[in-house]
Length: 229
Image 1 (cartoon, helix red, strand yellow):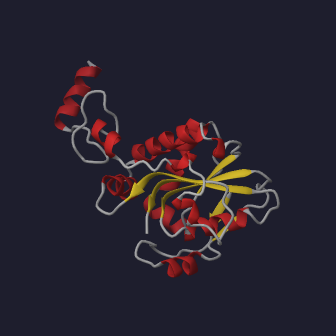
Image 2 (cartoon, rainbow, N blue to C red):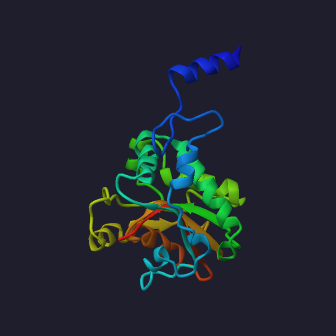
Image 3 (cartoon, rainbow, N blue to C red):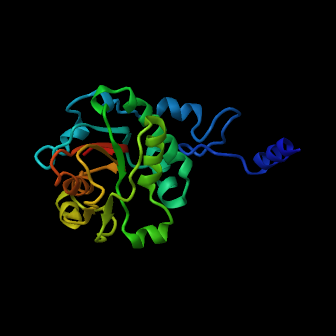
């Protein structure tokens, strides 16, 4: 009986792909087979000194940086991230985290990660949105890597507004000193910062600095996507 009800539900409200918005076929889940094939994977999990990593050169010491996909405007990747951030489609964020997490778990550059730290939202933004998209992505990483997530290790203490249309200098200034670490929970170890999109790297840099204030801390980065400049 339940199976028939689900079949009727899918008939009138078919599941659609988060990337292309086309109906999913039987056996497909969240992303259709075509999107799995064409979404632009970076392969940066195994590439030392990759382009995303170089974003942080001269600013903050990063052990390794790996986004899952390349980000382009009006692309399937942008659509998926917007579905997550603005329409609460959490399965897309979880899937991206699980996909990248499997790659990181097998990559020597990401061995020895002690905890995953999602980029926090300001409390007012969290209240209005109802969830943190970086935490959803981080949960997927945690599940596939077998590494705990520490969502409260960092706290955002100032709100800078949307970073989307700001230039690099403006972004850096707007997030300077925006994050603090809970010193009572910080320990010498290797932390993986999780974010949705790496653009100028300003927000992630601002997150890494309070973590690196403790001797013996190392920081790496995982993201859903990287926007090339």
